[in-house]
Image (cartoon, rainbow, N blue to C red; front, side):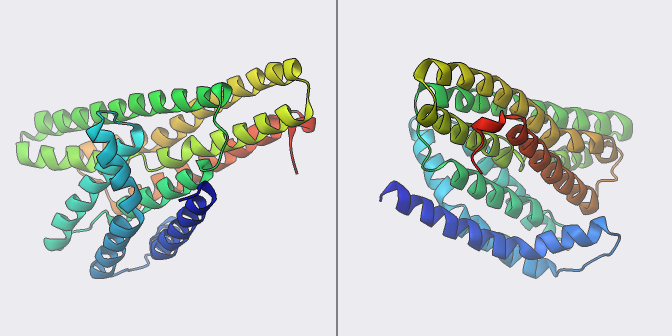
Length: 281
């Protein structure tokens, strides 16, 4: 398959996932405006399953080959998290409890959008620097999330002395802090960075282009750090609620919405930070 065809396929998958995910976004909007929009758990199960199988097929295939080569990137880890969240929600669904299908579905959708942003970009030594940094930063974030989950487990266990309930709370933190924004927090920055570097190479002398590309690279990495911070800031604020057993789907909706808003806003600030002559329409 040609690169252009691959990008079209990704766009189709992304649009399909967004369409299937639309009820979840409506539900989030309702929660944030104080209106409870009820979506049947059965419908949520069907939508999340379709997104997990159809939209996630590409990432499952990539994860399979990555595991065979023992090269586990952050996308593979995110797919593993998404799968765990989906299976965990299935258990809750069978017990007629509030599920977190919304999180697994949005995670896949965001990953597809991030992958579509990156397909077709030129990859030379300069362009790879932010990508290498992004992958390393993703692994650090996932480690911090794991530590937070363990802390929530220990907090509940020591306070209430209920080991089984503590396991559930620890899993809830994983669900809440599942960095679905991680699939978009860095690709959108890399996309802006690559567009700018390509323009520099086409319109400026080589030495001047390299000098300006280094400045852009430093600012892009700084924005990545900020975006990853936004992806994790709001879930961290909700950990005390999880430790007290007060975690609710509304809190998850709030973290997702605020992460979306913060990451998109911060990414646009990077675009407007660039020198005016470096921007293309």
